[in-house]
Image 1 (cartoon, one colour):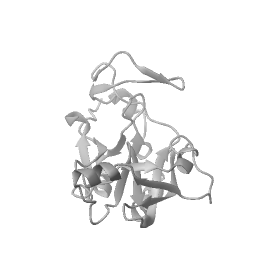
Image 2 (image 1 turned 90 degrees about the vertical axis):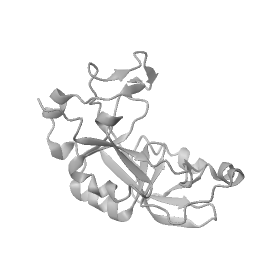
Image 3 (image 1 turned 180 degrees about the vertical axis):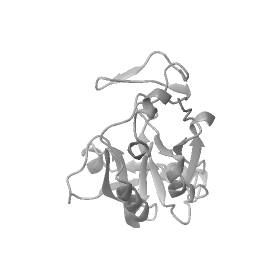
Length: 203
């Protein structure tokens, strides 16, 4: 069996206080946008910087140029060219919907898409990972707090690479987005501008 811990990255928000903390508007929250595909043709999802007032009081100025990838928790909001590349890859269970980010100055940034998965891929190894044994149960699912990750090689061996290039980790409270090294360049170009890629083994 292959060891996959060197082959996959968590896609995480860069540690930069200037980056916005995307928060959904009340209307968007009511649409259960993280759990189900949005109807085709429906209004874009809308987000604002939930840390706006905190940043203002702390003297933190917004980043001058918005990156191609923004974060709503562990979910990604990406520019159109990234979304189109992912559509071309035909990523299983991935659904996308137009998104608008309303900046601190009130400007509407519309060239974004929200990414979510209708199914999560629980592929971390319970024997080789370190985690909190007592899980949080929500909606019939058990979600663990993970300290160190290792992937389940036996499970990944059974899944064709094309079906596991990008996924959302299941069975965890973090629910990070995960990408294979072969498509890391799609996200790596943003590592100095909003994103950091973290190898599974380095978590």
